Length: 491
Image (cartoon, rainbow, N blue to C red; front, side, top):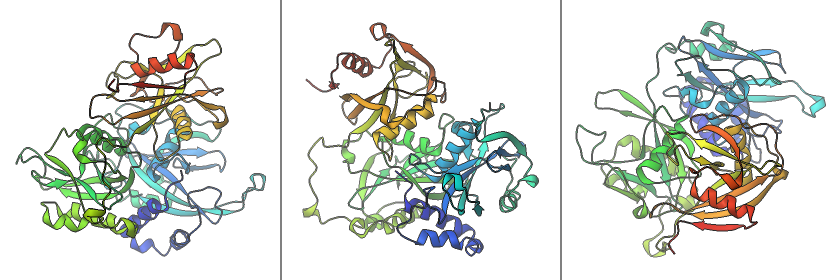
């Protein structure tokens, strides 16, 4: 689904809080956000719509530019939002990857700019009568990233749109407003590792807080209530990957709708300021049923209860600010006697999509998962992924493109099997949807080598020994024309 109006508005408000003197020059953008009924993220909104750019700085302080063939201009990578993008920063990262081949894992958001753009620019776009497009304006949000790879990153240009790349010193950056802001930053200093936290709330307007262990001198904020989260690791492609990994590791949580909310600034034991990117997501489960691996307790609290807790002022303020933006029906908990009881074991099921890609001779595509994968390391599996804020078929099409460079059209997709499976007791149940692609374009390529190290077509009668069990079962059921199976449930 398209980017939410709330996410766009929150991002722009955070930017204007840093650059209040730009409010007048961005007035047309702000006015467009104030109007209701317009899809400002959609490229067919010709009263003006958003685009997002990736400002990538290498170890020498140079800024990445590309030659856009359509305009003949040398600019930073960037472009329009797509329905599958779940944040404005994700638009920039996707465009960077599509136009230059540089993967998201090769860059790091600049500390303090994890969810807030470095620059916002408004520029006019000429009419294209051949495409049925009148003249309009682009509201361009530019996000700042640091290229953290020590070696030169291989480049694969999007040849129909990009004619070449160039690394320019800051004083030759083409955009004047961007150049002015970059000149004020120490661009040759490696940014510190960033942190990410999850602001998890439910439909009653309560927030999930984590009581930390009381180990003074060993952990940060000992004995205090805090948000789930932690520091970015090298394997995390983005800060969203960081917060999703931390949720899974600390509590076994996998949320479908995580969206950037803002940046919290905390002070560590040495007195240094630590930026924390905060992502918000809704969950209506029972925290007592989660498998907590760190800390003492997880519990729901209404914003009105925070004054009773030992909690950092910045965290408390963050929760109250988010609660103020929720609809009034969610602003507080229901009276105790009106709260619906949750039957034991009633939990959300995680939805995963799986690509069943079969060649005419009957061989089936499998990928060998990376040895460091959290799930099924060094094991073969079909191309798969979790549904985000999108429908299942859109998720499948996105995952096929991102993971293997395969292009699939919606009309060529059919559901061929559903497997309802569960792992260890206490883990959330999962619904695996297997879709067949009757046609596709492209050959499988390693777009995410940190996840998959090899693609290969296998004979269903001679599948590899190291194969995810429910995948083996699903392939057999598909071969037999059976639509449904179950794995891992008690007999």
